[in-house]
Image (cartoon, rainbow, N blue to C red; front, top):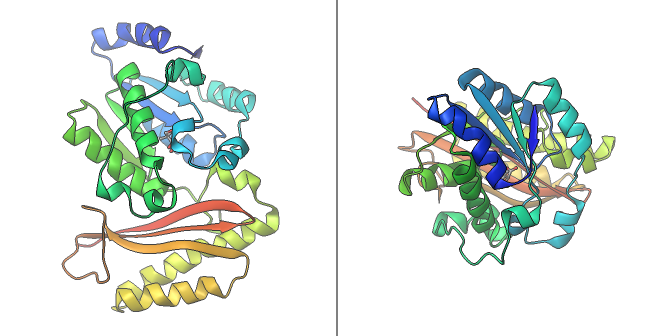
Length: 283
Ligand code: PAF
């Protein structure tokens, strides 16, 4: 496993693969690796000749400096896990390597980036789009892998790559959950055992919506029922619970005529911001 920390070193090292026609898989992460990341890595290793994992806590996607400072950074543990997994390259740039000068150009995804995460974390997706574009240019991967837990991020990045002709396949990987249903996230490290138990209710509220839809209940009614369910749990503070059509990220109140539906949750448990979603495809 090679650990490189400048864009030039990495691009140079990867040239020998692309010139031979070998496929490169990129797994962009902010570190604090968990089983969800390991799924992305395993998929990349199965589908590509070479796998690159990047670890970079990207400052431009945080609108809250406390959240940025508190983001876990267990670099040594992450590197030994990646070594165990036989990852080919790990890219660990610092802020100066990726932002040598004050960044003045950002990706703007438009209206779909101003709802849900974008509404509560203004500028978040400008930063995500910008850093992901940089990584895609540096690595030139055949495929890049993103967890579907960050559904809005996945949908926006996929759209960016189609509309801006990035020659890369954007692959979404199913959310990995604890036995309790809690979606795996680097942020879970900041929860106490009790906090994790409480947070498992997030998925319970989403599953109630799925069961209700399958039994033919109205989406609006189900959203309201789950909002009431969450409001009865004192330790969960809901930021939003929103149903969208994933094809355009428009908010919806009914499943009629939809091929797919996502119900997205964001909220706080023990002061830790958590997100999760339900992604349903209809025949
Ligand atoms: O999902 C994440 O961990 C980050 O948003 C990403 C895609 C690595 C960009 O910093």
